[in-house]
Length: 211
Image 1 (cartoon, rainbow, N blue to C red):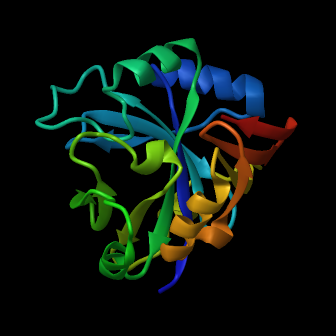
Image 2 (cartoon, one colour):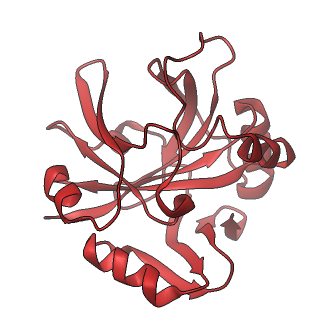
């Protein structure tokens, strides 16, 4: 199977808060994206190089309550408190051409596969029903797009590039073994320390790490 980084999610208390913070940090204004009706969230998106994109995501205050827990831990009280302080790295998402094979090979539960649609595009995404993230976000979500150009090709290129996904864990070898089983160990740098996720970026303001 072919796996590559598809996009990475930065959570914000509101999109307005997130856009302002990233404008200060990266030197760009992330354009508005769309709404996720099934999750009552909305986003801003921009290219991040190598057919990947940065997603700034927040709860949509104009949407009704979803019939399930929102993804990316956005309903979790601890996440809500952290996002009230500033936008945070929430999740990295790996694109695959064989989602069923990924799930079959995974040594951990990646969640259910949910089908989403917007316009003439659809995608299948692993989403834990309780809104959690596998290994608190250290493991990626997996996405399989319907045939067609990658969505990033239609987004604005504002000069921001993802250099690497950075993970830390008290037992880095244990984390690496899971990443290897998922065939994504080549997509992230793993170090020792408290559990953590961050994204190293090149931007108009230079080298930036979002955590």
